[in-house]
Image (tube, rainbow, N blue to C red; front, side, top):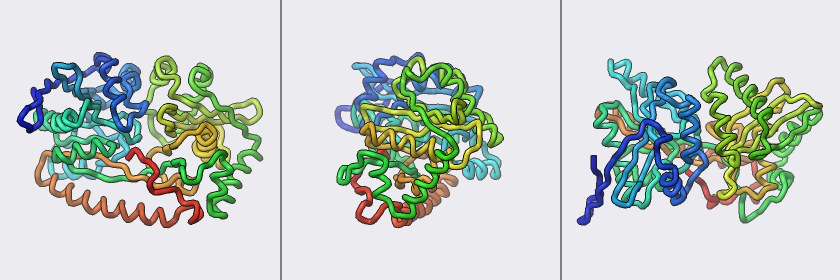
Length: 404
């Protein structure tokens, strides 16, 4: 299959599907990733390969890889991590209602085509491309793949602004969501966690101080472990906490223990672990992904082996925020959903995903729904900002950079 732009000098790309991420040229993939506006550690090939090799994201778990590569005479020009999905778990952009509507009309919604980092609701580049022409060709190629494969739909999640423009040009529908991120404000720099608290409204500041005090009074202290300083015993205890969280919610963990073994071997520099202790006994752990060159941190997983009030907030927000501030990081992303994060200094940020629906009747209904949902999300973000936890004079600058 060949794709090109509509210019007089038509650029031709040869497309290739790869069912094993490990077979992709790692150097070529990394060279493309380095050119993007919002790269994240989750789009590195070792991260995606680890999901596959650990059997966390494979056909047996409903994630059949079909990575799409566009090549020309100069080599790899564009690439995207794609999966044929047999369900909608682990995506964090919810289309269950769409699938149910298909079912009620006697139609099959699954399998569908999904472009995403499995189990990872982090906004960023999804279309790795050498230039804008290759990016637009890739957006069209993903659409053609969904069409030619007879799939019900195509979805690419948590795209950045550059990708969004390419998808819009290719005729995809855009869906808006919201997350909560802390962004360092260059107009009012903070050097310590107390500086952040000082910028907050009095009752918000007192609530945080009270929560932190109750954790400390319970005899809990924290240690931080970064990169290769995270030992095998640390990973073992973290995985025990991670699985415990899923068990408490009556579900099965998405990620296998082998996935974290892969991370410790191949991507250790991208991980920061906080361990909570009561005396000499561990009671909880949280795992944060970090990207020092980008100055960004991403809250990912947590769990506890003992219930202690407010421990979740301390492990997942206050400790990571304090660490980010002390280490000069520019951004901390709190993950999917969670309006409660706003009371802890994380502000609403728009996220976007791209969607294509084969059936024209459902496509029209979805397009109408997205227009109404988008207006509602925009109004919701405006309402949230009116309830900012910060003093009016200390409101973070709206021009602060965002990955969405």
